[in-house]
Image 1 (spheres, rainbow, N blue to C red):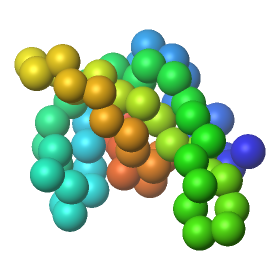
Image 2 (cartoon, rainbow, N blue to C red; image 1 turned 90 degrees about the vertical axis):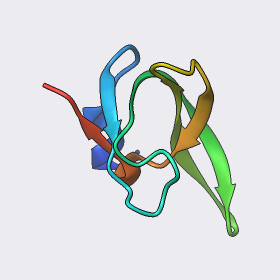
Image 3 (tube, rainbow, N blue to C red; image 1 turned 120 degrees about the horizontal axis):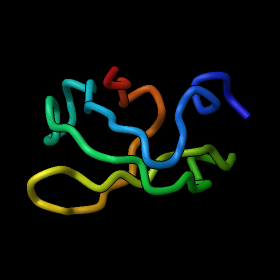
Length: 68
């Protein structure tokens, strides 16, 4: 389990910090971790419910920043 993944937990508020994402700068709530195939490996991503729209999207831990 990656170290960054352990810093995140269900129900936590996060901000999308990946500048290449169409959701850059938006905030949301972590729903659950999921294992997603990336190449030939399974990596953890988070299902995030975006604030305002209520849309749910998957993000890699490095695409998310915590909100204090």
